[in-house]
Image 1 (cartoon, helix red, strand yellow):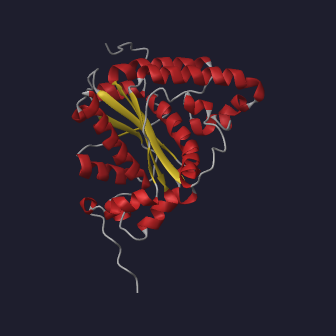
Image 2 (cartoon, one colour; image 1 turned 90 degrees about the vertical axis):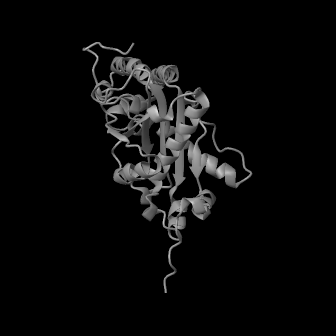
Image 3 (cartoon, helix red, strand yellow; image 1 turned 120 degrees about the vertical axis):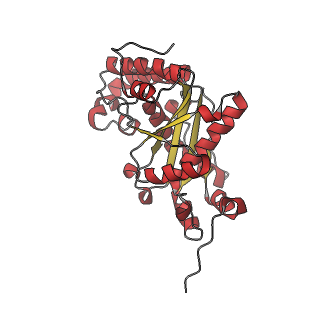
Length: 281
């Protein structure tokens, strides 16, 4: 059964009730990560990542997550990977060496919650300089395929494939996105064209499952450059995978990374209907 305790109420429960979700309905929680507050011309990658779980599972996840963070003395806004891992702002104490043990215990506890309640994880990354190069030749932006909506629609495709493989109804899935990104309107239009679905905007500070997605997106952002370098050379890793990433990998994921070759193949596919730009005189 879904939780009905009136004393445990937050943004996810509000969505659940306002949108009349059934307890066995699959809900995908997605957010993004990019440097400089998502200003994509100033960084190398954009990553969108998240988890799918049933409404009843997210109902149970939410109070457990909130309680564990409250025990650790977190602010009401909850977990924010961008600030927590470098120890900025209100999370400065967590970066101190004397708090390493407590930090590791906390992350292990949070990872166990995610692995307990979520069904699967999804991730997609775009190498932004490569996108800019290909966009100079093909009308990617005009086709509503800037990096953020491209990642979003790719994950929707991943989710639908997963549903077909696991016996879930793809049409029953609802997609909740952290709404704080410049290309949110383009994502809405692209998903309407491709799948006739409307993404649901939400705030990571209120909807706790988005904080789990935020952590996964952050880890994906940190790991993607390493995978890029390994692909393009024969060298060994420069560092081991982060322990905080490994803690999340009990849920399988097959992240898609769009590099220049991937983007060109997509543009050259006649079914994609992405036109070449006219040569300037």
